[in-house]
Picture 1: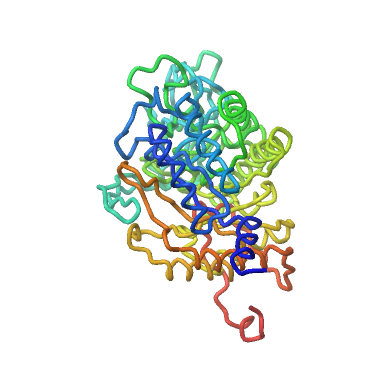
Picture 2 (picture 1 turned 135 degrees about the vertical axis):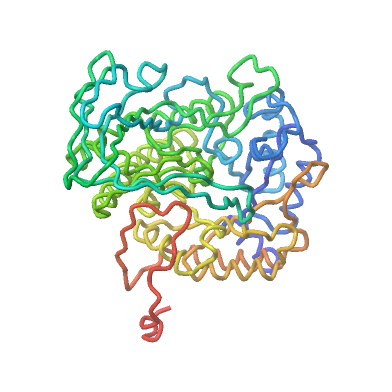
Length: 521
C-alpha cells in the first residue's frame, strides 16, 4: 500500500482531530468551508467544532449581535450545516461542542431549575455577646433563595490580605480578602432555631476555652447563580436571544436542559470541554440530602469551612474565608463535600452519556471534572472518551499517567488529549515543539491528539494558531495513534492516591527513580 494511502487510513480511523474555533455565526460560509477542507488537506481526520463566540463576548468585545448570530439561531444552523457538508465532502469525522464558549451552557429561560446554582453566604456579628434576638435573619425572604443552614462560631483571630491577582500569568489588579480562624468546638448549627417566619432567637454558645472575643452568625442560602457563558443580544425578545446560561453539572436535570435544547434547536455528536462555571461555592438542590445519605451528618453544621477553594477560583471567591483551629476537622469536612459533589456529577455525566448513545447512537467525550473541586479521576469511567489537556497538566508525564491509569482500569480504549495549549505561546509555537508535547502525552498514556485552536482564516479578530504545512507531523501522530489504540494497556504497578479534588491540575506524586531503575517505563 502506498505511504499516503496508509497514512490516510490511520488519520481517518484514529481521529487526528483539530479544534475548529467558530468566532460566531456571522462568519463567511464559503471561507468556513474552505478552512475545514484545508484541515483535511494537511492530514486531519476529524474536526471538533468549538462554538467559541469570542469568549462569550465577556472578556472580548462582541463582533455581532447574539440575537441574530447566537447558538441555535437560524444563522448558526446555516453555519453548522455548511461545516457538516464540508466535513462530509472530505470524509472528516465531526464532533460538536455541546454549547457555546466552553460548552457548559445553552440558551434557557433565566428561572429554569436545571441551571447552575451558587451558595450565597451572609455573616453578621451578634448584637450582644451572649444573647441574640435578631428578628428576621439577613437574606430571609429573598425571591429564589432557599435556606441551607444558620451556624454560629467564635472567631479566634482575623487577618486582612491584599495580594496581586493574576489571570493566565498577567496581573490584573489586587485580590482583597479576610481570613478568619474559628474555634472548632464553638461551631454550632442553629438552623432548627429559625422559625417559619425567618426569625432567630438564641443564647450564643460559650467558647470552649473561654479565650474567644468575637462571635459570628453565618447564614447560607442556595440560589440560581445566573452564571452566563455568553452575553445577550442588544434587545432580546426571547430566551434564545438572551445569551446562554451555565447548566447544573451536578444533576440529571442540568444535563436535560442541554439535551432538550440540542434536540430542539441543534443536532449531532457532542463533546464537553473543561467546566468553567463561575461560582464561589458549587451547589445543587440535592446536595444536602445526598451529603447526609453518604456521610451520616448534616452538611450545614460546618458550612463556613467550605468558604475557600470550592468554587471556580477565577475571581469568584468569597471575601470572607473561614478556617478551623483544628485543621483535620476542616479537611475532613471539605473532603466529604467534594465526595458528594463528585457523586452528584456522575448523575450529570451518566445522563449525557446515555443520551448520546440512545438519541445519537454515538459516543460522548468530555474533560470530566476538569476545573472544579471534584475527583476527576473518579469521574473518568462515566464518559466514553475521557480527555485531559496539555495546558494545566503542563505536559507532565506523571500527571498524564494519573489520568490515564483510571482510564486503563475502566477499559477505555481511547484517551484523548487537548494538545498544544501552552501559556504565552500564541503565534510562536513551532511544529517541532508541538510534536515534543505529543511525545510526552504518549509517554503518559494518551493515544488521541486533538490539536488546540485551528483558526478561522477570514477577517475576524483574535483568531488563534495555524497548522499549514503540517502534513508530515500529522502522519507521525496518526501512525502512533493507530498503534496505541490497538488495545487497552495492562498495568503492572498501581499507586493508590486518593485526592478529594484536583481543580485544574494533577501535580506529580511519585518522584523516586526506583521504578525507573528497576526497568519500569
